[in-house]
Image 1 (tube, rainbow, N blue to C red):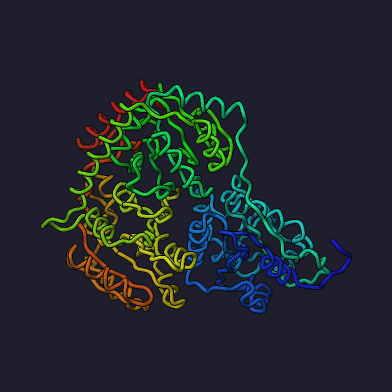
Image 2: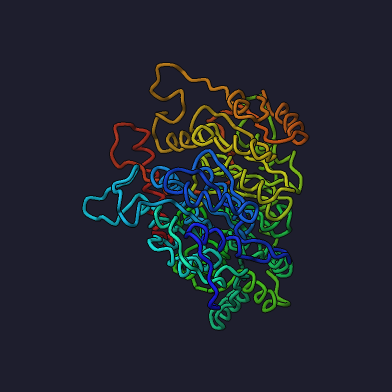
Length: 617
């Protein structure tokens, strides 16, 4: 750095530095930070608010209606951009900050970049305790923002203005790193934000950040190649790392050249189109019958960019215990999970090498015939699950209607409840990158805010949000934000009278209907919520569809409409797609007065004993 300096407040320095960070996306140099979501209060309005106002379009500021919602929108924006760009979120020092902690956990679990800038108490402690300050009796250094510590990849508290010179590049290094990627929290003491310092002028130069694509260790890779060449029945499980590495073209070429079938996790869904000749669909608890049958028969399973969480592995009961398991992953935290053979490296770079190393090798015709037969059987089951009938619609039939209406430009957004399961099984991806599910943290309330973030990230794509009534009631305020910003998106609100997914799980566990559906909850007045009227009150265009045919007509109208649209349709909470899926380990009470629970426990113990025999935990 040169000796030239510029005198700025810490808040001004932060904003100027953020505006100067650059990345290259699709051959074009763009700002890394696309903007800042802000709900102002004491602790961020006076100093940071003033600095953001002065920045204008150099670092745009967006106003939201809830701190959690705006953070979800920022996270969805980053996910839609394949982690190549991000946004920041700032709040006041108390409930505004803790409102973002849930979103921070979501970003942490899903390995998605977002910069949290919560206001904090006075570093000087001059006016302590300030409004909204959490006082830890045994530790005077603790504030409400310490809640971010376990859900941040990097946590820092700025108590001197010059600390930004070290803290900001370290924060950016985490946000941009493909292995360490996740939320960063910089707590901004409100007095420090307003303090001035003579910062080196070079600190604010435009800086280009580039993503790493490390190749795997030679010996680890050689063991993988040898295992594949010696395999009778290989399977690749594509996770979110395939999309974040932009490796879908490489995966497509490898699969076509070798005939290795591909199954996909929730995060990996959309790496290949549904009709790709090697595509089996979703795997695991919410997977297709085809993918799960092939997974159970595979003699080598190759995870690519996946965390191998319990939904993917059927709580460690899906794969043959004698099958070899390899993990291609850029994160050392994930690469040896489930006692896998590690292959540490970028998904794209590793798949490129694997494609080259397997030149001339193809799966045996018998394995190809097995996988194709499984897909053909599943396609028949898909048609049966998504075809409407005379009964009250199922969630699967709603998914089928939305899928029939979708084009290659449609991006479907979902999270939590029963819809992600039906979508993982039934949604047919027409173009890579058009499936956006938040299922790592399975966070109810993500959907509408997430749809807003996707629409801001991909303004030329059609965004369709699928959300249940329970999730809508938890967090719908960013529908008003979408209206305010003129964002076009369509929300399909599936009203099954409560928490239908958990009601089905409760009943499958031997329980009776209790406290999940509205009809089974303690109440004085039976609620009948007019969701269409509520959406209209937030400024959206809205209507209620009486059946699947009416839904399809409403979707056509929504495509032609400007702004945000909400379509409400009632569904039967007891109906779910009959085919596909796999066992999930949900502990059943060992003692109960209900015979249904006792029977469920007997079945549960039998599955546990069988899984231990297969090598499960």
